Amino acid sequence: MVRTEGLLLKIVNVVTYFLFLGSNIWSAASPQRFYSNGRDTYVHPDPWVWYIWSLIHVLLLGTIIYQFTDKGHETVVKGINWRFPLFAVLIAIWASTYSSGHYIVAFIFSLLVSSASTHIYYRVKRYHDSGHIADELFVHVPFSLIQGWSTVLVVISVFAAFGLTRDHRPGIWTKVLAFLVFLFLAATSWGYAFYSKEGDLLAAAAISWSLLGIYTHQRHPAFIRYSALAFFIVSLFAVLKGAYGLLAKRRKFQGVVADEERQPILGGSS
Image 1: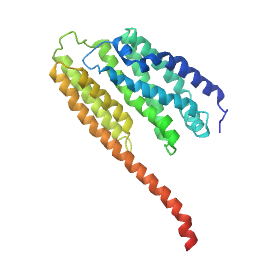
Image 2: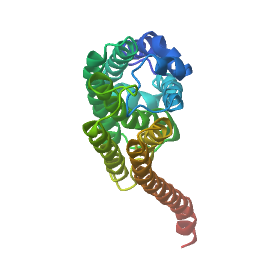
Image 3: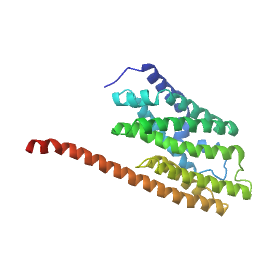
Image 4: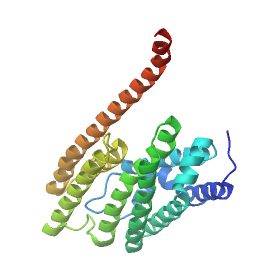
């Protein structure tokens, strides 16, 4: 059933998706082009890592459509509310400033994007349990991916603004800072793995995916390359923990459904 309540916000969500997120669709459809406009620093990943944008954009299109249903109205309109158009505007400004070479401004907006993403993520996880497949696919999945990816954007942006590019020989401090960044990303992935009892598989996976891309892109020095590999492996265990938690949650849900289906039969036979 389609709901027209909160129609203004729904229209704004549609407009901001196509106007602001849609205006940067080229970065999702062609990450190589977007990648080539950025600074190639010692924490930059391979171009294929940016394809996560393609997945996020498709899922958010589903979010825009889903908001017109009863379930979607409760989660998207009442839950996320005006935070979605705010996020869309902020991420569009980040993409524009980053691709145009205004890296310090892009870093500032990456922090704002991360803040907006965290606020949405908190609202979704705290107040809207994914008890419905559409809620899971069009709300929890995209915003879990965004939450993990926005952390990576901050890292990429801060090095683009203040770090060395790969055409400069890295000093000891660049190596140490890169190591600490990889440690931070791996620790954050574990934080998502233990965010709840079942963990957050996708937020951790977005970070692990990025660390793998950093490893495959960074050839020299060996310390940075293999530090990225080591912390990718560490983060991969967080992903596996999240996968285990998700499977356990699914089994529990199926068990509850099975018990509810058996209850009338047992009651009738007593």
